[in-house]
Length: 290
Image 1: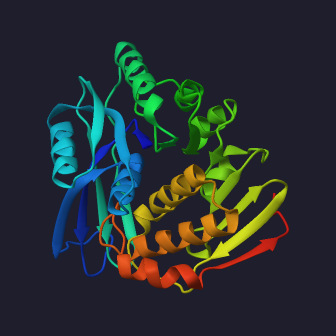
Image 2: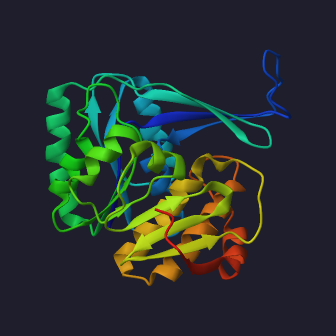
């Protein structure tokens, strides 16, 4: 089983507009609401792939109820720790790209964080891979991902985070770090262990066993890129579980990430495009850029 952790989930509200213009009124062509947050998106993609997955994290209030209901309707298994605060919302405005407005999230109290650690310790006993991803809500310690990585013990751990949470996670030696290029640069990390850096439309670069591999998508795509990195994390979780060769892991991750850009909302992907892209992703060894 793959366990995904979303400590700061959200109800994602996506507005589809023809063209986004600052300081102007817009007619929204379509509105979609669904459970979101990076780990939730990873779980949704894994469920769509037919993988055994369980989503966990912190969830509370009326918005948290909507998150749970949406996951139930989508057939995504979950076990969230209830908290007293109300889960946040995010607003994504999509034209030929995406503009995202992220609320900070609910305040989590120390007792609630302790209860979640106990829940996580139980759930992780059945997991082969854990994906820790997304932002931390107010109230959580900056080393939250490091704490969970150490609690994971026998499971392999992927961390997809940014800023101080990413830097702190490195101290616990997760099996794979998956920041994007900006997050990696801002964290100022010295690359150690296995690292996969997302480069947006340029694909991904992985450093493992002292060598670097670059994987590039077969074409430049327009759409909603907000869930692309989460789709890539889902593919990498499966590859880590199956001990797949790195060229195959990257090919799958880039193809799934590209297929997610073509989907209207994060956590979804175009199945036909995924099958079409996969054999066309180029993977080659390159000089390590770090």
